[in-house]
Length: 255
Image 1 (cartoon, rainbow, N blue to C red):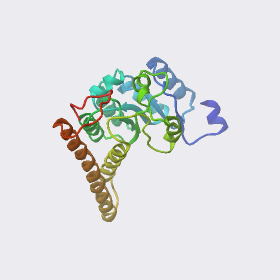
Image 2: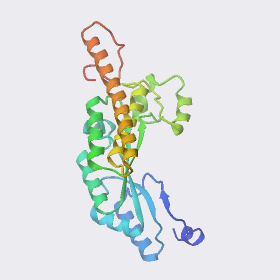
Image 3: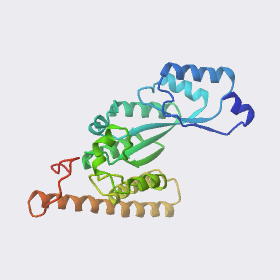
Image 4: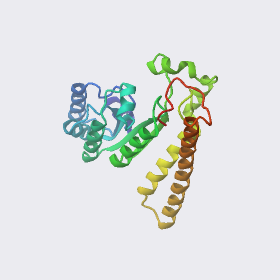
């Protein structure tokens, strides 16, 4: 920090270390040293909800923290448990509220498409986003990383060109394995959430807000159509008029 400040004096830093703040005592000492040495540089960082508390947030704020990124992933406790996140939705809400109260910007990382995620789980994630009100949200579709339990669970359902798709994830959403819903649905899902967030947070002219409203209605309608089309197919399958292929990762009993 001292070297960066003396040599470059940057306007801001992004501490892109997933484990930053994993050890609370180390983080407290780091903040105290930055403040004591007078090497404060505005920065953003990653941390975990179980580390967040009023005291550490006050230290982070004093050390120059302007934005905190949380790997929330889902607002459904059932999905978080399946991911083995060891995180409670109630703790996410508490940490979000405390970050807002500390005057620090909040970013969520949300992941859709985890095996077994249903419409109900997706709705719980949306509810968390709109009630906790993060300042920004980053979205991804679940992608299996070799060496993880998730990868072992879906490796027999990977796309034949998964290596190519993996390279494309930096340029947009990709679906690397056979998931519950198609890629188009997840793209419409993210667009509908963001168009609604944009409308609710808009502080523009009436014309701009009207355009945002139209966009929200259009994307919401397309998503509604996709969801209900899937429900129709599921009901046809249940009535035995139409048969869906069996998939290992979920039961069709709950769309």
